[in-house]
Length: 251
Image (tube, rainbow, N blue to C red; front, side):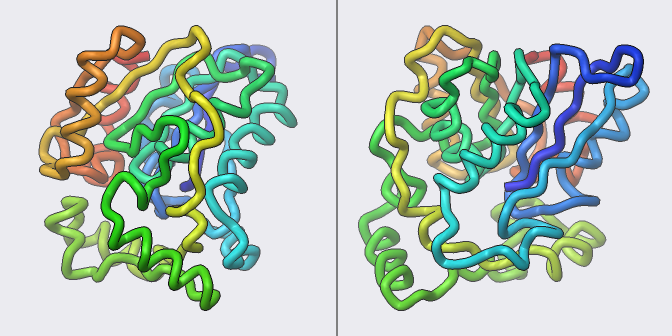
């Protein structure tokens, strides 16, 4: 879960409207950062957020790091950079991070939570728990033995993420193992209790049943706007212009 923060600038300083883009396990130079080059000519400027276990901060990873650490990283970035009225876009696993960050956002710095083909976790849910009991059991065994969770096999990336060619070549050495805590830690409150804007955006070329279900649930939820972008799960890698346009329209 890496983030890049985009916002309009005035006299060299960030204005109140900021965009925080979250990617799943793809660090600097890939994923949402590619959208920065597209958004930048429109008067926005990007600021990197480095999370433990991702990219340049990977050396800080440990089995103790998990969902709670990543959510606090989002809130710390907003606080220490004095960002308000933030649009936080969370992708895949990052949806769980966003839900936990919303619970902890006591100052109301996040004005728009956008789940991009992401786990739209609710109170008491975990990324593993919403998938299967078998996955939870496997994660708990790994947790007890201090093991890390390896990335999905590269040969599956085309089907599950739509990634081929140069994208795979770049990402393969940069996609790193994650702590079981990322998948086991549960959201500690109701992330959707405050009045702010909520959006669920599904990648239409991804057949993942969970994300299809989240889209349908969001359509039935009056708190949410629900939409789709024509692309596969890692659309920010495969077609960053299309993704940037979709997010701009939803924002």
